[in-house]
Image (cartoon, rainbow, N blue to C red):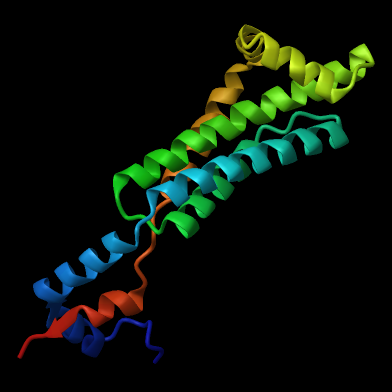
Length: 182
């Protein structure tokens, strides 16, 4: 039988193990000391911008608005927040969720900027400078290009940004915290 199969011996071993509270406390303290919220924020920001640019480029290249790109945004942002932040606190999930939403909104906005520059025969920098000069236009553009289905994809992206932002505890780490009962 494989190690992953359930057998009476494995069930008995699992029933006779429990987490050592002292070692668990030390382990959690060590994980908390490795957390870096600043790196999570900076990484989340960078990942959301990169994902938004990729979203706009793919949308422009395919000439098709692909809503499930939001799922990729959420995954990328969450992964980067987890990798750089090494967080186990809820604040890391919030950072991942917020930047996933930001990346989705920015991706849609950049797509609109590309299309507007093509339609107007203007450069991307000119259209972007117009938006930076009058930020109220940004909200109008987002409102005008919004579709109800965006809520579904944004929701999935936010969920993934949250879910993937936490450091994962491996089975080996958990096993090292168990003590056998006699």
